[in-house]
Image (cartoon, rainbow, N blue to C red; front, side):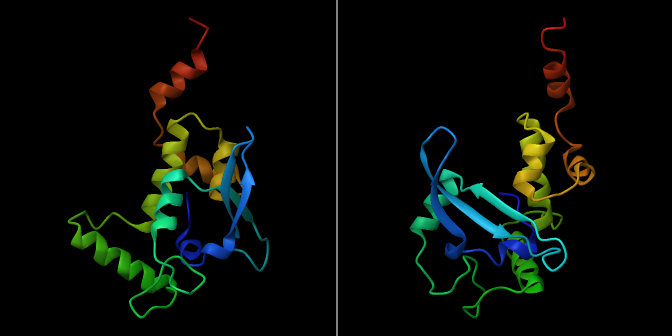
Length: 155
């Protein structure tokens, strides 16, 4: 999942539905409209929930509110509250302060690129509407792997 901070604090069980993957296997999907530009040019993301994340969600005690992430006061996070909480958790874990919510998003997009996903596939996960923006996030992809894939069968 490649959530923006403004989206991860807004999604929860109401955004899920049961469906089937392309190969016919049952799956749980997450569908939400991105908060960024939602008033001008809304972008909807509709993606299968990875099995590992689904297992965590199912094992988590319901809170009675519509979002999965809950702040210390028992309600949904605001943008800055989430960022502050995330930073405190990073510090507790002894990780560098450069570990940010946005960094996780970039890492997800980079991982997808390194796995050989196309720009359009990555855009469908991230909700980006231009290739230029996705290219900015995926420059860190393994260039050697990309070169080998591009030249496969030519040498």
